[in-house]
Amino acid sequence: MTTAPGARRVQRYDVASLLDVAVRVFTERGYDGTSMEDLARAAGVSKSSIYHHVEGKEHLLRLALERALDPLFAVLAEPGATSGPSLGRLEHVLRREVEVLVAELPYVTLLLRVRGNTGTEQWALARRRDFDAEVVALVRAAAAEGALRADVDPALATRLVFGMINSVVEWYRPEGPRDARSRSGLRPDAGRLTDGVLTLVLDGLRAR
Amino acid sequence: MTTAPGARRVQRYDVASLLDVAVRVFTERGYDGTSMEDLARAAGVSKSSIYHHVEGKEHLLRLALERALDPLFAVLAEPGATSGPSLGRLEHVLRREVEVLVAELPYVTLLLRVRGNTGTEQWALARRRDFDAEVVALVRAAAAEGALRADVDPALATRLVFGMINSVVEWYRPEGPRDARSRSGLRPDAGRLTDGVLTLVLDGLRAR
Image 1 (cartoon, rainbow over the protein chains, first blue to last red):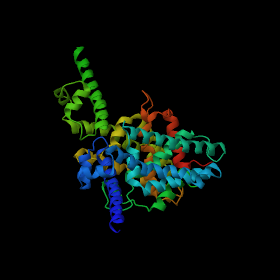
Image 2 (cartoon, each protein chain N blue to C red; image 1 turned 180 degrees about the horizontal axis):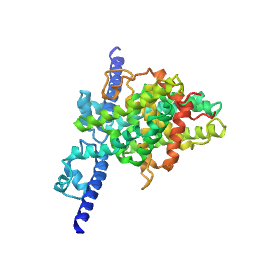
Image 3 (cartoon, rainbow over the protein chains, first blue to last red; image 1 turned 120 degrees about the vertical axis):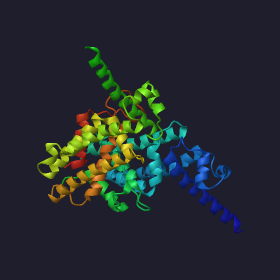
Image 4 (tube, chains in turn orange, red; image 1 turned 90 degrees about the vertical axis):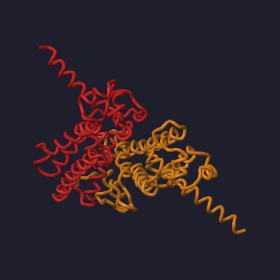
């Protein structure tokens, strides 16, 4: 009676820690450059114990990318994103997007680096385009309501705003040892980071 | 009398076209993953004819990175960057930075992807940090003059602004065939791109 729940607990832990290892190795070496041998070595387990949990490398990639995409799409369904004036909905989506990025940093990093031609990579790229299109639509709606400036094309503005937000994965390391990329010591907490992004995106650097 | 200038012209052309090839191959395969054989094959010449122009792979990398770094640092010495109120100087530097990025797109792309441990890569990373520090100093000066908002840390603001500007290399293709990354068809001309970046950075999306 005690072994079954224990075994399940171990199995759940294994899938989660396998994903943690896989996302790190995929990001470092690229998905194409990673073999099941690489994953087994990095996880300290045999290939057969990986196949006990997942169908293979592409299944691991899909699980890792879902861990970024599912919460991003969940944001679009939140009440703050679906009711009220478009500017408030846009602000909610951008704020929560930064929060998801920080909460799932390695997984969003992997998502942003996906480039390849497997079905899973193509699926992730299509999901990113769907997400981007939803945000462009919000920007257009807010512009039509007169809440956004009219002198920057909504598609360009969205692309630039995503550029700013997504660049956070390149340097933001909320914990752990400082690597060469965070040598500046710049480590705002997640709240200050999110506020800073929203302030700059909506109102810019210039004092009013 | 006609052969000597012709020969010099061919030689100059060769170094320039060699750099064009090298920057493309370095960006696609990574510097570590590129051999002199790869470069010779991509350029359609022999290795010995490459060694006729440059000392080796790291010399080519240095020449390519200088083609991004030299014009960026030249911006910091321009009159618009060295006189007048700090906000105007900052605006000049950011505008010219976007212009250099567009003018030297493949070279700035390579610069932004440099990560490695060779002397040349470490030198380029140090130069990038020097450039960033100059811009942070301008942001601090403009904030001290009351021209910038006081509620976003200057180091964070600079990092985010660079994130937006540098993200342009990921999708901006002013000419040539559309690849998967530019499927959206978003192709502002360089002037509209630069104006859009400056407007968003200084004043944000929100209508006043």
